[in-house]
Length: 186
Image 1 (cartoon, rainbow, N blue to C red):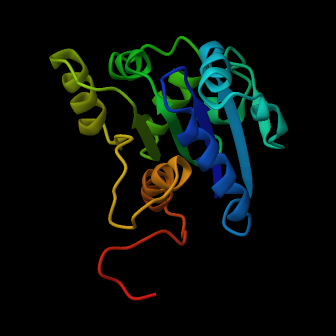
Image 2 (image 1 turned 120 degrees about the horizontal axis):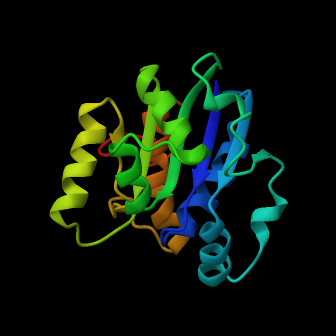
């Protein structure tokens, strides 16, 4: 499967980091990974994680206005777009059908082609406009996966807590990962 990952400027860079790290480990299931970053994604990553490690990932990177990216067209064979973290501004533009950059165009493509669009939203609390926008994306076939960690596995670090969300995202994308499963041996 080919996967595109979009990173927006919402708080929650740790989710993006853990996702990118996990995708490396699933190389036998993923044939290609492309990324696109909003301008604010870099700033938030540096502020929250205290580094510029985003430059160390070897994934193919597309500029936010480069509509020549394969996943900007329904003729591509990308199976999923994961937006992690997904800002509410991005949610609003997707819900409104506004394809003004590569992230929103790719989301539009995933919806129209009935492929996986997974928005890892990171906001609290939600206002009514945000809830309606998330409902619109869901009704169009997208998946809203709030960046809300679970604690069944008793995570000890921020990364372990973030992985509880990323594990769900990987499952939603159709990938097999080794995260905690409730009341399941092993």
